[in-house]
Image (cartoon, rainbow, N blue to C red; front, side, top):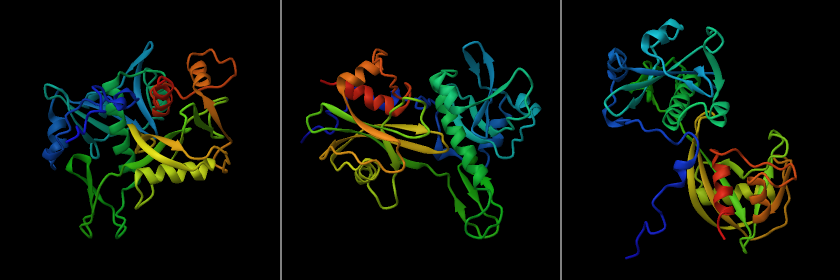
Length: 313
C-alpha cells in the first residue's frame, strides 16, 4: 500500500504564511454557555480588542502589544456581553476577543488595520494567528446580529461560536469563506502566470484567486477562475498550502495548476496578466529585477506559492 504521506514532508508550507501561527488550545468540544463568563473571571485572562478591520495596539518601537486585561478593556468602553473565547495558552491562560471602538482611544493606543499589522511585523506569529481567529469571529457577529430565518435579534452562545434566535430557535454558526488562489505553470514548468488587479500597489503582480462556489470542488474552482480571469485552460491541479485571511473571514487555499493553453485573455477583474520566467521571478524576489515589478509581501500565500515554485529546478 502506498504511503499517503510520502510527499508531505516534515514541515507544512501553510505554517510559513501570515496569520497561521495560532497556538491556542481551542478545546471546541468543551465550549458551553459558561465558557466566556468563566474565562473573564480568571485574573490571567487576556483580550484582543478588534473592530472595523483594525486592532487596538500599544506601539513599542518596531513591535506592538495587543493584549489587555479585563479591567483595561472595560476602561476603554469595551463591553463583555459579546466577547468570544479563542482558547487557552499552555498553562491555562484564557484568551478572548471583544469588539472595540477604534475611533475613541487614548494617545498611547493605536488602531491599526490587520494588513498593516502583518506586513509591518508588529505582532509575533502566535498573536497574529490569534488575531485572525478573533477578527473573523467578531466580524461575523457584527454582521449577523439578526436571525436570517425570522428577522428577530439573535443571541450569542457557546463562547461565541454560535448565535441562537430566541424567537424561532434557529441556530447560526460562524462562516469561513473558501477562496482558491493559484499559480498556473506551463507544461514545461518554465513560466508561471501572474496577474495585476487595478487595486494593487504600483508594479505588483500576484496569483489569480476567486471564491469557491456552492457545489464546486477546489480543483474545478481553480480551473474556472483561471479561465474566467485569464482565458487559460487548466488541467492538473495540486494543493500546496492554506492561509487564514481575516478579510473578513476567509480561508485561502493555495494550489498549483498546469496550463493547457498559453494565450492570455484578461477579463474586467484584471488590469493585466502575463507569463513570467523563473529567472524573472527570482530577480524580482531578490530585488535585482530593475523593472519596477513587485511580488506580494512575505507572509501572503501568493508569495509562498511564487517563491516555492521559483526555488524548484
